[in-house]
Length: 223
Image (tube, rainbow, N blue to C red; front, side):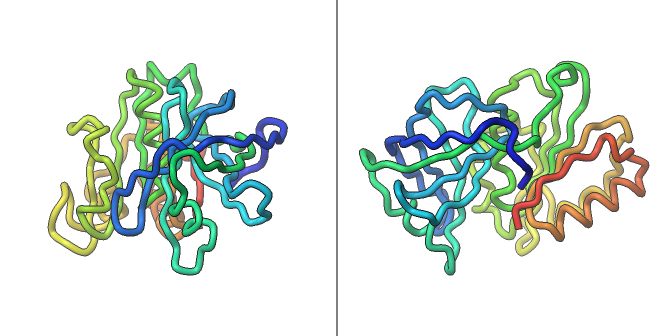
């Protein structure tokens, strides 16, 4: 993820909820503790006093009184396992916000946006859509199976396209890169890509070949 946008400040926040979306993916909600952020930014989260912390894009709207992050539990990931076991009333330590993966406020009401995500890379886009109800967007979400379409009811059904690679369900059978090959993108569209590096690199090259200028391409790589 990208470099700091604001000065570092550590805060202790009380956990409000752990919401399981699948067996391995969950949303952690905790107090906002006065943190101001721009949708698309991320925070560093871990247990108080621990050196083991991880970066997570903020999942929730900028206007809500709490913060949420979307977490995929990793077999070899100590932090994701410990955060999942938290119960309301316990605490986390957060730092941030950080990052430049944000929308230009002058273009939100006038431009068309394409959001391309894989897996939990949908997190900043969830914050975009929840924070800016006037957005004219199309969201492509690449997952393996339909049950990984995390809280898809939060998006306008006419603007959300679930691309499933391992089953013929969702809105499109195949990867997000297959979708954009079959549905070329208008070069005037502002494109934001977030997820694993392979998807981001492949989608970036496809969009460039379709004539989308580099100034309209923005990427955030998760791993």
